[in-house]
Image 1 (cartoon, rainbow, N blue to C red):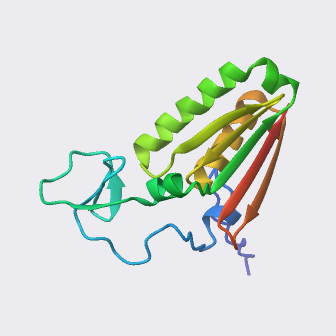
Image 2: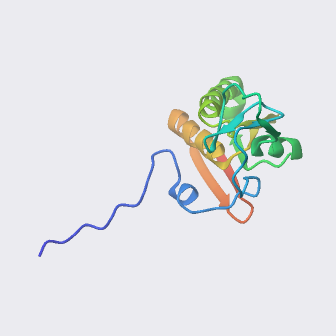
Image 3: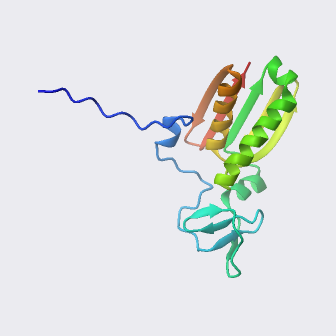
Length: 167
């Protein structure tokens, strides 16, 4: 009888399986289905076909505030990215441009993935995000592009991801 190989875990490059595969409750996500169409009164994103999109809002759309804008308004990030070390100090403009480009790409795909702030402290950059996946993606992209050391610390009780990258 042939041995059957075990099923491979669901792994997606650039995504941490523990973050993506486990059902986790984000307190800022709407638990019930939203009225369609809806438009965010702050950013203008439109909720249609069960997802947020960057499209022109229909005239009859209900006005609400999306979860990303609620996080920004309440100053409650889901992701913290700390970029540390001499490299961060010497290349801060390049790193900020790199992070902003990544945000532009991710935000075009998912309007809820945004950078809330980028602050500079000594030899460190501190980035806050509205979503754990964007924070994770920033860390992975930095690690892929510049190597260094990447540390991820996820707290599902708070739906919070802390990413630390240094070189």
